[in-house]
Length: 406
Ligand code: SAH
Ligand code: TMP
Ligand code: ZN
Image (cartoon, rainbow, N blue to C red; front, side, top):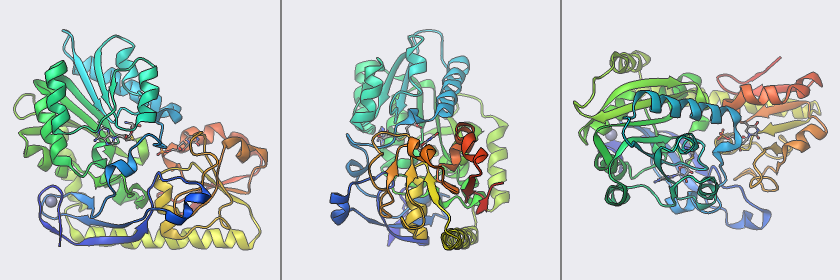
């Protein structure tokens, strides 16, 4: 019997994606033979509200010295993290020698804003190749997994933190109790925790099932996060919806009673209730929507192929691993995937084995259609690729609906 990673209640999956490869497991032909797969099933815990994967690969398999995701590949995300850092500095840091810790600091996209004004900071990221980019920029970084044991060591070496930040990493961590306990130890009595992740409410509303892949152990809501942090004497004091990654939520958390609680928190919890996020039947509806979306996308790709059209994928995202494998998209339907990340270029997509090529290849001979796998970066990409549309090319999207954009 499967148990909830947060509260140990018994769980039944509401969707089974079958065997999936690693979302970021881009590989070379000689590795096709022993490609790793895991059973990807997702469950909702009616007791504590947490949506979660029932199995997750070992962390060392996902986060290592060849990690494929570099945060700095998006200009808009760099601006987003500058605004995040400015908000922390303006509204939450004390004047006297503040100390900021970030978990999942990657290439330093957020912390460089603190380093630039000489604020004491510490990044934590076990993926050595991406962390090295931050270290080379002079950002203090430890290349380890954050957990309760590391939290204790940081307190001994640097003292407690005024702010503990994290973006798109809290939801990656199945040993979440060790993380939250560690945060409780690391955080000063008056300090704040601020983290953001893709939001369950958006995923349900948009049927954006590609937010489910190996690294995304959890899909959080204000309800589930409140329940989790309550166990460690902390409370959500504010919530700030974000447009990033197709709809994210930023949670602001403090030790219980240390800071006043914004009415935004109760308001958002009421919205979650009104949306039916507490009802098991909402997740059955979500599964039916996913199946429908998959069938529509495949019908479209097959019809374009029958018409002799060229279709290329845009953005070799980890999310797209769920799309290509769940839908059964093969290289005869999508010729290649264009991506700006050097480490991904020349590899093949996980499971589906669609070639990944540099973006120059996309521009060399525009296809008839581009399937926007990086739909969360649509604005930035469409600005960069105006010439594609001008050439008569059309974008295909599948969130919130399968559609050809005019
Ligand atoms: N914060 C960045 C990076 C997100 S990708 C952004 O939003 O763009 C997730 C990152 O978390 C990866 O770089 C991964 O190596 C790191 N990570 C995974 N588990 C971690 C842990 N236990 N402690 C610290 N970092 C972790
Ligand atoms: P993400 O959706 O997980 O952030 O990944 C985005 C991927 O898309 C990443 O591999 C970089 C790639 N990308 C491009 O190829 N061109 C672009 O203009 C942008 C913004 C991202
Ligand atoms: Zn639970």
